[in-house]
Figure 1 (cartoon, rainbow, N blue to C red):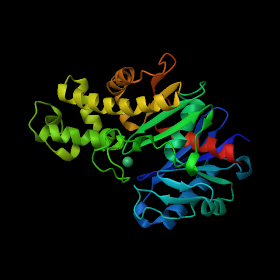
Figure 2 (figure 1 turned 45 degrees about the vertical axis):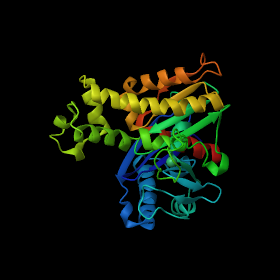
Figure 3 (figure 1 turned 90 degrees about the vertical axis):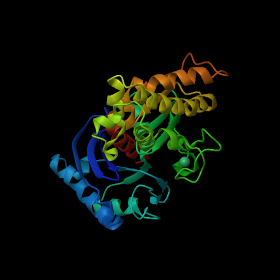
Figure 4 (figure 1 turned 90 degrees about the horizontal axis):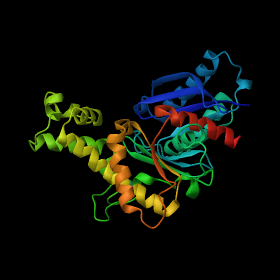
Length: 321
Ligand SMILES: [Zn+2]
């Protein structure tokens, strides 16, 4: 069996596709609004319908599908198939039996995995991490997710809650993070952190075209706007990415020193800034990793784009079946 359903439970959209777990190719990718405010029962009902629709639209029989993997943006009880805390969804889903509810509705073996660990598994199996023994993955978006593959195994220690690379401190006295810790990487280099650096620059009246690009409507400033300003030569915008990359580089240096991965994979929406973000990461890592050889460590861009997680959830389901 090599056909599995990958599902991505996002704050905005629910997405599902049929993934060939031998090749990483997928088809019948379908997206519907999550409508998370309607509550978890309603979201789970819609997810089950989405899965059945994807199978029906593909012309496959249910018996040709090996199972379902669901990528979840938060903390899980993987053993019991429960969501514990999903910070970006209203109600936060405490102890919701997502796995068994979906398995019962669609009559297929169903498995949960954190979305960043799913992205890591997708990139390791079919993307930027393919072919090496160990990788560290950063997913830079609304938050900063993480994952580790060590000696060809996805690290799922502490019930799959380990490898939250975005919640490692880079400043012990830094501001309090949403997770309760101080000075987490996520506070300094996530999409919202980059946006607020842009807003601050405009409000302070620094010489930057960022304000002009959004007609001084600060709500329209995004990492993408700042990226475009930087590409057009704006020094302040370049400096914002330089700072974000330096922060990520500090966290990456710590992980490299601790784990020694062959590759550090930088993914997530913000990583679309490419070398603007990766160059300062590489420079910072080169400056800070001194106790181990950097000869066999590469800092690379993720390759599977926004579907890495979807592919990874299907791979995970196949691993579990
Ligand atoms: Zn944190």
